[in-house]
Image 1 (cartoon, helix red, strand yellow):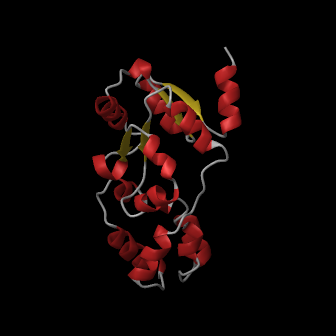
Image 2 (image 1 turned 30 degrees about the vertical axis):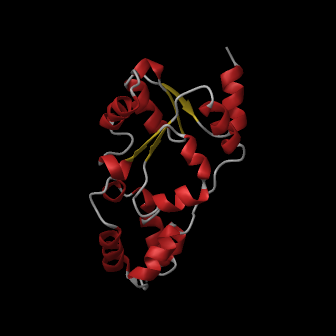
Length: 176
């Protein structure tokens, strides 16, 4: 996404560097900022040369794919455990995820940052997730690709696993 936006800015190299993690803009993923506000901010700071409708269309395009084997893993886990999706995502991109990945329906609960106004690694989102799902912290296994999120969950008493691939997770799960 950063590359898509940066290439339409006055100084693409600078914009790319400064917008590297634009999809994780805290205010956007917690619902405190609208996408049109983010758009205006980028336009004013970086000279974005694109109208809002074009920007919105680009924003909604997929920018990542599920890891190979993840559908099978989710399917298997959903048969033996209660699954909760805890995601830092904005309200504008979420429909793209739902449309492209029907396996999402296998989750018993979805805790989405834009819905609850919090985002990982805020400790409160883990407590909120426990309440929504009816879990005790000791019953939670948390998979995430960012160590800062895992460390925050572990401080809450959750078990954590840095997820890099299905194979790595299966190997770690098989180890006593």
